[in-house]
Amino acid sequence: MDQLRTAFLFLLILLLITISCKKSTIPVVVKKPVVIAPTDSTSKGPFVYTQVWSDEFNESGIDATKWSFETGTGVNGDFGTGQLDRATDRPDNATIANNVPNADGGCLAIITRSETYIDRNYTSARLSSSGKGAWGPGYRIEARIWPQNVLYKGQGFAFWMMPSEKPSNVDAIMWPQGGEIDIMEYVGAIPDFNLGSVHYAWFLENNQYLDWNHAHEGAYYSFRDKQVPYTNPTYGGYPPAVGDTTAGSAGFHVYGINWFTDRMEFSIDTMVYHIHYFNDGAAFGNGADGQDQTGNAVISGKNVFKSEYSNHFPEWWPFEHNFFILLTGGVGGNDNLTYGGAITPDAVFPCYTYIDWIRVYRRH
Image (cartoon, rainbow, N blue to C red; front, side, top):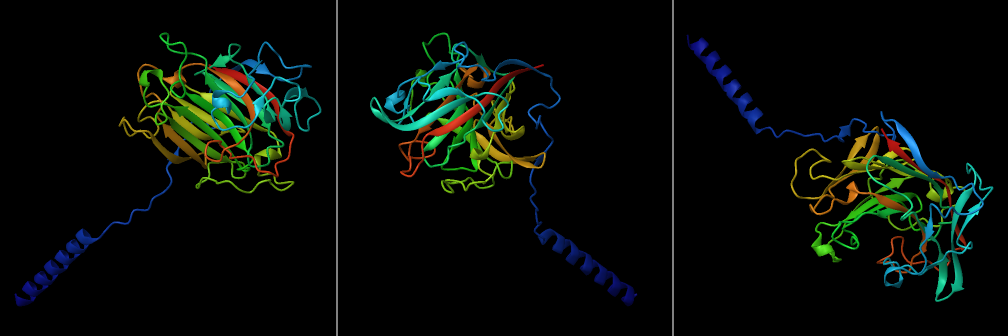
């Protein structure tokens, strides 16, 4: 009997020790990247698209039924971005070019120059489809572009969009309340990356501009890795070495957005790298909380940036309306204001960017 009692007590003590050890053990959590099933990862997906508009730039001149020139120096005399250039409508700054290597046909050439013209030492061109072509949800918008000579800090080119619609009770919608879409922002100061972004406001604020009322959600795309980098790049590495194929200036790429009713997908060469969701809680499925949120996810094996949300005030949801296209070259004059920084003294001009084509597709 004593032996049985001893054995029972031993087993009881062992059981208590085991339970105690399990309760006191701190679990080790191994974090893995979030993997999400592809959502139209080629900017095409299971949908059917019909081309509804294009400019192939194969004619002898710039098509005035599709494009207008914006001339001058814009907001505050520097386009509101600290630029030093004056935009002109001269063929010296925008023209049709033929025999461009690897182009499908003719190209639109936008050229920034170092020259004395009126009141400035640099000139550029700005083409706009305002009043002639605008698109919104339900469309895919793409352009094949080569920023050939965007090689130095202070040089840059943008393929972007601005609102063509406004509330009925105002003469114009203020920036950034009306939104802005930057499909391609390529600068010589960061040669291996493109920036794809949206700009919007948190409040209507009586349709007035206020410095603090500006949200910007953007993601860099690495031409080398074909995905969003895990650390954002800084200025450096310019000019890229001759033959460096990891720079955006090395050749043509297709820059685009696929515009849905609930989100916008930014892509380069069909690789989606930034998805912006319009509604609160849509990007991460965690419910509406009134907070803008960003994060990364692995989609189709690539790092993708996700952001939300731009439908902040009920009077105007910016990315549920039509936008027109802008094609602009520029010369930076302010490290703190100009994206891409101030022009460096050793920058080489003229600076050519070639646009092979722009195409717009309707999704069915």
